[in-house]
Amino acid sequence: MRFLIIFIFLITNSFAEEIDGIKNLVLIKPKKHDSLTFLDDQNNQLSINEFQGKLILLNFWATWCAPCKEEMPSLNLLQKKKELNNLEIFPINIGQDNPKKAVIFFKDLKINNLKPYFDSPDTLAKKFQLRGIPTTVIINKEGEEFARIVGSIDFEDKKFIEWLSKFN
Image 1 (tube, rainbow, N blue to C red):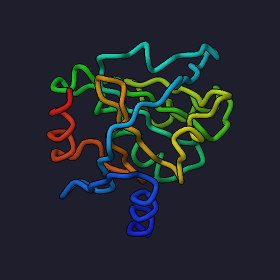
Image 2: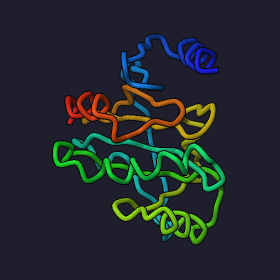
Image 3: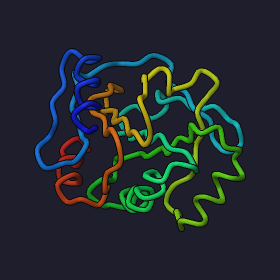
């Protein structure tokens, strides 16, 4: 299954490279996306452009997704890493859950360093052509997508943190 996901991803991108030792992480040719917006829990619209100059992780998840539930605690801890002080993490619910259900999901998992966000009516899931969840899109300081994590990952993995800190 992993091979199939990577193969599909390679076909849809002109350049892709898997990083040794980091599960499910694939580098792609940097790509700028226009008008990337999502919603906070008060239904206010946020734009990726507001965070220019930051390293951004867009983690797409849903409350019914078991691998999402498994990786969320490590994503929560990643936000507190001192060596990643220029990192912004946005867990974006694409499961069409109401905000109350997402807040309960975070509370049950003791997620206290992150807030839940929600896919906008323009749907980032479609713009990024997501093939499943969890998927994490990594955007560099210039606002370009340059890597994806297709499937779940342990965000506390030392190799991943070392790799990510190079872009911070």
